[in-house]
Image 1 (cartoon, one colour):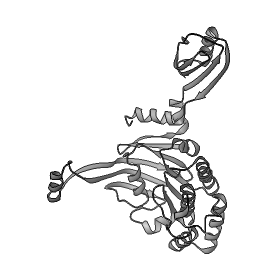
Image 2 (cartoon, rainbow, N blue to C red):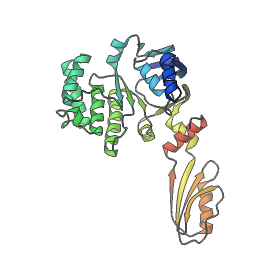
Image 3 (tube, rainbow, N blue to C red):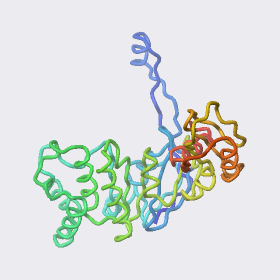
Image 4 (cartoon, rainbow, N blue to C red):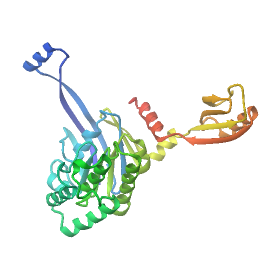
Length: 326
């Protein structure tokens, strides 16, 4: 599906110091700084995968997505997607991809949503039977029935994002780029969008590249994570591998009969304490839970114990720290 080898991209960014004098100087002689957005990135993605494409701001995510969608031309390297070179075969290539940018709209602001859909049908030259079938499916699964006759400017953010996703799928693309698709959405809308992405992936085999800072999107959708930082590929593996590497840390909440002094425990970090409750952090690679429970039983009369895994966001932060991206 996607084969990327040695992509590089450098931008010339104008620089100027603060002050009126520096502004006048910049009018006469402008100075530039070379910023390497991509430094030889290489990876491949198979058909039907959902890949979380993550990294801190300025890592090169948007630049590489724009290269893959045919908007930008790299300085060097190769990019073959479904047999196309995106920036060379753009007219033919874009018929096979869908793109959703969370901060940008492909819908016309002052006309009803359905009119935008009809215009997109004409742009992509979608046959009427295919368009009708796709519209019915998208309307049902994304609950767009009441929105189709509403001008885009009157939609809430969550409603607009559902319509944006539908617009990107009207022409039956094989590859979908999603850039922050759940940004600013409420919990109900996020769940609806995630469920729909899973549905089109399983039922239609649509390959999805998901760029997001919401790690719960990654946990809910992606089987694989690609991490880039400072223009380089830093990690490429499964979410399970991240959990295996960083998921050994657990939190334990212990409720017990009244205890006047803080607990003294070996192999655990005491996060909080009160006479009836303590919250602990334990690394199961170093300390067994049974050993910690034995220590607790020796000091207090336990009433209840809750054990929870480390949130995915914490594990991603640790991954960033490992690569000095935090």
